[in-house]
Image (cartoon, rainbow, N blue to C red; front, side, top):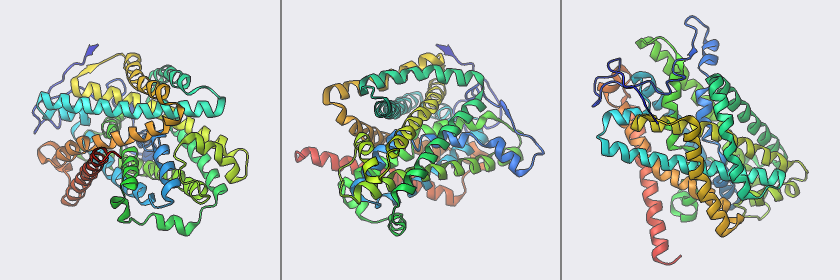
Length: 455
């Protein structure tokens, strides 16, 4: 282990319990130069990248499980949840950008520099659990894709996913831009696959548009609420808030008020565009499930493997299932790249300790692989999708513990200076935070009731 050096002084120190902090992701901090006198579009390109790394977490295999189950069981009804979750994500990621650029701290560092040590350790443990739940979804999703494409048993597929450690290390050593390019390429692959799938599925446009209108049944129906919160947890992921507040600092821009204001502006453009692309992917998965499985009466299709085997017959072509599995594999591998960065940022930020990258990755992979192998070994491969959905609900449960400090810090003028949240952003942001906490509390109550009544 390496104890990171502590720096003192610098902008953003007023208002913090602990003064000064080491740079977030020091090996790539400020390594991508933004031309000072470039055109608007040239600066868009220079700032483009972090938003797509964050968007990866919004289209990982966990999303597939919840979106497939939601579309097959309830048709287009949960499209409204995907849209609202995405809009919430856009605001929350904007706040992450502001925090990172205005204070020079990522969210984990900000928590360490503000809260007492016991709270810092509590938040760190919760965040590590969230990363483990996310990594679990990536392991299972990649393993399912390997099984569907090459016939590899699911347990062995989970073990094979550990080799992506070398891919991550190679990309990190080459430079941050290489990592961004690989991620964007894989996202484009996923989008292309689903564009073809939607053309084949021919969904009813009127029903799709109606699905984006919220309805009270989503909250009153416990089964629908469970999937809705799973979609929320799969869309707005807690570790993405830590990740984004760090990687926006990979850009080298003028450390002045105007330079930071410009960086926030272009960073927000980058993340908003990337998250709208993620909205297309998530909506496409649910629309595909609704147009093929729900419409044909296959309402219980909640497993990725079952969806794969039904697609060719229902869509009438032989390559639909292959496209589906290729997109799933790209999604799983993409998520592992950003998961490694998030793990590094969280550990360094909260407890100021840095493990060797290969060791950090192996630890997080082991935490994900062990429960996946145990559950699959004990209950069979048919429970793998249940594992994916449960992991996303676990993520959602921990989301409030990331949103609360994010809103707390970005609404504090002593910490943010002129970049403090305006009144309307404070109201909207706190409303989102309380909504997330309230929905999770209701889900917990429903689950306790089910256990109490033996359901």
